[in-house]
Amino acid sequence: MVETQDTSMGLIIENLSKTYSNGVKALDNLSIEIGPGMFGLLGPNGAGKSSLMRTIATLQKPDSGKIFFDGIDVLENQNEFRKKLGYLPQDFGVYPNMSAVDLLQYLARLKGLNHAGQRNQMVKDVLQITNLYEVRNKSVSGYSGGMKQRFGIAQLLLNDPKLIIVDEPTAGLDPSERHRFLNVLREVGNNNIVLFSTHIVEDVNELCHELAILNGGKFLEKSTPKQAEAKLQGTIWQKTIQRDELENYQQYNVLSGKYNQDNELSIRVFDTQDLHGKGFSSVKPNLEDVYFVALKNS
Image (cartoon, rainbow, N blue to C red; front, side):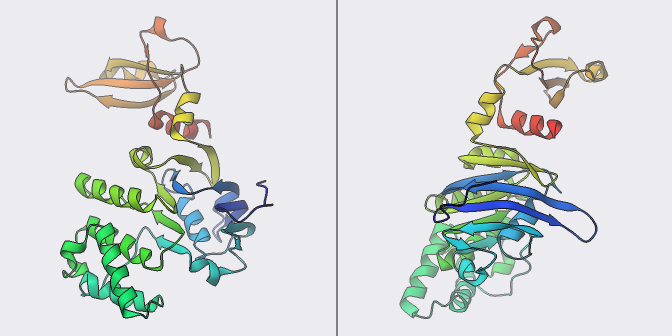
């Protein structure tokens, strides 16, 4: 259980559980404390990531547990908490046929920015932060997927949130759009807590100073990427084999395999024993190894 003497800093989750009516246990007694910066929540589809995001964002109630943020009991003071929250869900719907600047003006008024000068400056600032200022007069409905995701960040920044939650934001983006979006998140993560949920290991590796791996509604790992990799030092082995030889390696704990240009398969294996005598080479662990080892051991 996480200690709750000081709830004035960061996000604190205590013993959070949620079981849906179909019997699926989405959150299983989760406890964690998250401080400022980019925090990656990594897990496969169905791991419970979106359930956790939605629960923190007060879109659904847990069966049990507590959430504190910046001194606020979130479940007891939802309206107060929402003033400090920015949330970009996995699917945020269809935008009306309005320009980005007009839609942001409208959303800013809804969020209580009634002073025209303050509102205009805020709209300009969020457009610049998200690299959308040059296309501010274009209809958001005609934006590409990556531009829509960046607009999603722009609109949630209007109320200057202290906690930002983004759920699977780069799924479906092409490499250049993904790169631009990650740069935006990196910038907004400097002065806030950004909870970044994804199943893409590379995104977490690029962005996050701290991470947790979630599966089956439970945390399997919580550390920094470097600490997590260091734990596996000396246990990751690599060997290049012919593709039709893979069946001969089923006794090994194979984590992943990648083909080279000669159609050979380079496999990575987790083993605490020395495999040099089996033709393997010891390699430096990476975050993908950490992820697959955690899932295999869960």
